[in-house]
Length: 391
Image (tube, rainbow, N blue to C red; front, side, top):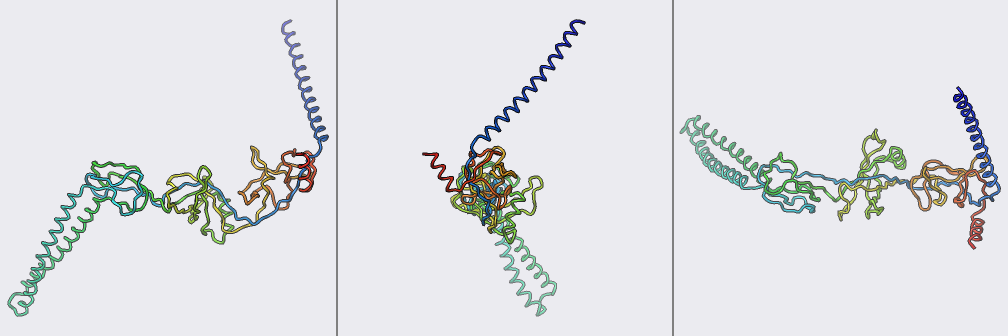
């Protein structure tokens, strides 16, 4: 019983002690806040230059991640069966349309062509004889030297030979077509990929791809644009389907020498991403752009629009994004976050957060403290003060 009583007394004292510590902490915090506020009041006001947000005629531009895609991506297939006898290229070579890539053993198909050709000659000889017989029969039947039935028989034989000749010609053409397939040719200009089936293997139309060709010039770049940006770029044009100028930047930030043209847009917004897929076409004479490469695209509208702009020096950035200093109802500086839509000369294009006529701190922003008073001076006075500080 005595131990329990001691334990209860200690517990009560502990609670009282904790409450005292909390009150002391609150008091110290209030005291610290008062000191800081007092110090801020004592600190001289920061000298700043104030400006108003202006509007400017700007051609809107929009950045997006892009992917280089060949205009033609062709799988080279065997169209006949046979042993792959020879290849005429190295992996990675650039080839022209019509250039021979592989040779499938041609002997069997050459023989079939020869037989079909000989069959044509044989039928032609028979047809020539049948035509001569028919001419003689026509004279004889007129003079009743032969029966009409005999004439009809000769005529039918001639017509059958004509039909046989047509069929033989089709067989000959078909055999020559198969013979031509023994030379597997490039259907488009482009760059050869890895060889999937090497020389010596037996191939058939079901063997799959022998290799692939990706065309290189011209070449496509596909890129997604948010529906909001798409509406913005469309509103700056008379026609949604207008062609627009496009710049391309490599991963290291280097700009591609040639500008492209955005010449295609998808007919729907992707529900999962809220974006519209667009495509630009670029000339690629030196084959610098490679199929599958990831790049950055900058799309330009065709017409300028009036938008709020803010000088670069007025905009700061922290973890939450870009911001400027504006003024609250008590004329004290406050942080206002903005969304920008790229640069126009020495200005940021403002998409959200500010409008024309808003007052912002232009110079002296590095020393500004939100809620602390500032001293507004002209640009000339600000320059003089800075010069005096540096002396």
